[in-house]
Amino acid sequence: MEKFLTALRNRKAHVQTQIDVEQNRPAPESLRLRALKKLRLRFREQIEYIERHNRQNMPVLIPVIRKRRVILS
Image (tube, rainbow, N blue to C red):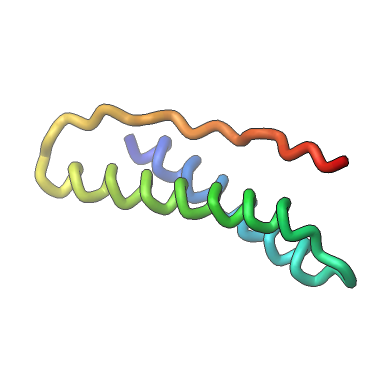
């Protein structure tokens, strides 16, 4: 379970890096930024959910979060 939590934290950090890069662009794309922030929030919620259930020694069913591609025209 620790490896999974570490992987989730790494993914969240990678998304945060992408958010920082996007925000520092001269003209950030608002749709991409919003999608990245939603993804970061979902990772945070999943990490907190798992940690909360681990403290209570309860079995955890882990919902899988997958990144969706944002296609801008």
